Image (cartoon, rainbow, N blue to C red; front, side, top):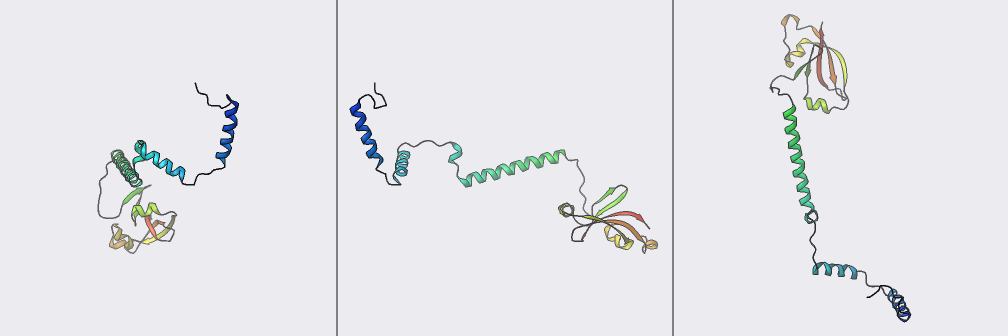
Length: 166
């Protein structure tokens, strides 16, 4: 039976100590270890796990497909959960807000995208509301309508909410 320590024979212990001190003085060139590891890997190839066999572009494609699939599933869920509404093309979107008609002057995406909005009260001539789909009576065409305007940070009007006629 062989033992790892060299303390069994004192004569060998002294020679091993001399050998260790002599070998400690020698340094191998810097690339020897790298070349030895490469040669060992060529001689004894190891099978890498599946995730290390994929290249960076393959991982990118897999991530893009997974994101696309996730977005598709999310869109399907949102469409299934959302109430079905008729899509109309024509005059601007009109909704009811506390009994007053709200008329969007810009797209809803633009209004939602605006970081800072404020509401400004104004008196608008009834003739100015005709292009927005409001009925115009020739007898009251010169009259004004009280309105609240949703205004963007740059002063551009985004929406109009009619308050009361004067």
